[in-house]
Length: 331
Length: 307
Image 1: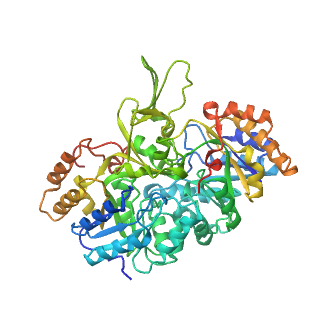
Image 2 (image 1 turned 120 degrees about the vertical axis):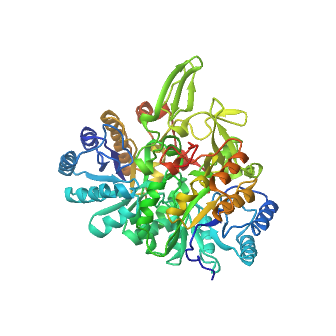
Image 3 (image 1 turned 90 degrees about the horizontal axis):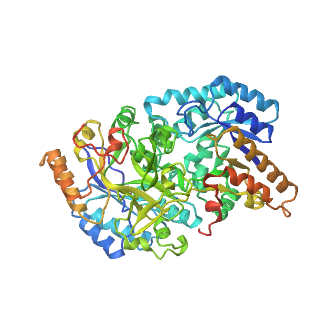
């Protein structure tokens, strides 16, 4: 299985390459990708440097163009495809039908990966994208159970890539508008979920309050660790109970499932976190490189090493990790 | 086979698929009433959760026949989040039903339609004219504007809309905002999803979610998350007309759906001024409505007067 690592800037790209990423994924510095955060991402010149660095050391570079352009902004996505093809990226990661169409017609030799934002969760959907656009790999949403991933990978006409570690979406990626409902901007339209400019922190008599677009997402008492107000990870009241009604602030960590994922024929494991710093990329890449190497050497004897969990735990959102839907028994 | 009828002069009214889980008798009674309502198109079927089986496909087809006999155009809607092989099996049967057109809510359904005419539901991400044109090449006849897009975005889509493709807009009802593999209703009752005891049956309009300062924020409907308040575009009727929208969708709610249909109908027919109709509608909804998306703002917000 390949290790696909995130890079929000050139330093992170180099860190990922240096520590054993098979491929690095990144985006341009605008709303053409789903990590459209201030100060993040690559100018074309930086991407050119990144490509030279990665290719010189045997790694590949994938470019995320995975938001949904609207008519008035279409030219930016089209130009981004052109630029990426000129620079020689190893694949585009795309969600929108129009962008897939453009890229597949104009650059038939350029590899296309279907972004997780395209919400392909079943075999017929995957077949559609393979037949219509020649997609060669599908990144599947983090809502699938292990048995579902296994069934998909067994029959999929495209390679299957799964998320291994990082922030967890409990909603189907590409099918969650909660962020625009509260702030006017969503991953689909703007490349950001719960954007920082809509966040407020207030110290009050009742504790530290976090708000998004004015909506109270959570309130933290003394001794509670306050988290970023990602809106699905707050505490809310339903009937007479106040709890994490949608999702706890945890991170995904599938280290324990590597032999099963490998046996299922999963082609690649992706690490989330283009918005994180180079130290995060370094540490996560090192841990996952070791784990994938252990698994490849002796799948039956593979054991998760305690120090991997300690190191990843320090980087996880909320300090906690979960297997997410992969661990669920449901059908 | 019944077809997706051609575009008409002004917007027609549609009744969207029932998003909640109601007991069988309630569903059947609802559609008996709907047969008498002044709606032109009715979407039937389960779009949220495959565990909701009060009506099977054959039951839905019986309802469809009754509505078609009453002069309604019927479209069979399909599941939005499709993961299990059993879910694909049901989807294949619907796509091959041979009698009624199909609303696809996942690309899997688009593939299974195999070039036959279909409607793209609101969960199919069509954000630009290139995407619309691409889907038209594989049989798209009608699309529903993704609910987070604005009037301006719709205008740009309409300007480059492929020939023979109709546009439908989600005009009234709680907005479908997100889908998950997790069931939030089961989670509320601390039940595993596979043994949910069908608790959605107890919540005919979903479960209200409030913030810790008691603001009504969202509605939990099984694996689907909705807006707290109904989205209401009745005040924007003239604008919708001007944009050449073919269909206005009213999403079924447990109460007063027939009255909502009447108010839209009267406003469309000129029997009521749209602002007068909108005022009556607002008066029926204690918590108010939202329309922010239409104005390019946060979806939960509400603009008091028209554009």
